[in-house]
Length: 144
Image (cartoon, rainbow, N blue to C red):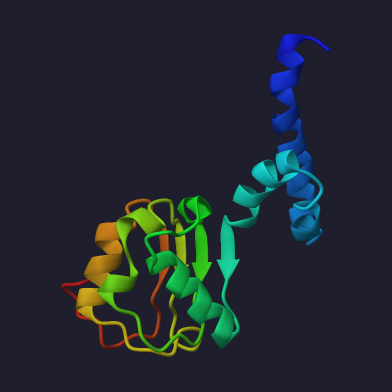
């Protein structure tokens, strides 16, 4: 095997693992080897939907913790349904620097979003393209 082919193996493996993500079989594949884990874990962390309350609490604790997994930096899609307390302390730039989609729509997100919360999100999520804050009448025109 030539020297250049060795370095292309993770890239090929990454493409294969993307198909496992679509099939929802990626998580078990992370246990195959250290190479599979190092290529697959960042893919798994890109899109997070938190639907159950206990999972949501655990995730919010992880992203606020100073020892959070480096994969939190890879999250690009985040949905937080039925989370009742969003504070500016929970959105830190280092946790959400790559976030592109955030779903906090009322009905999906049942808490109140204040102008202060919206400012905190805007200041920490510089790559945010699709914030969904629909049906939140408590946000002022100035904040938007």
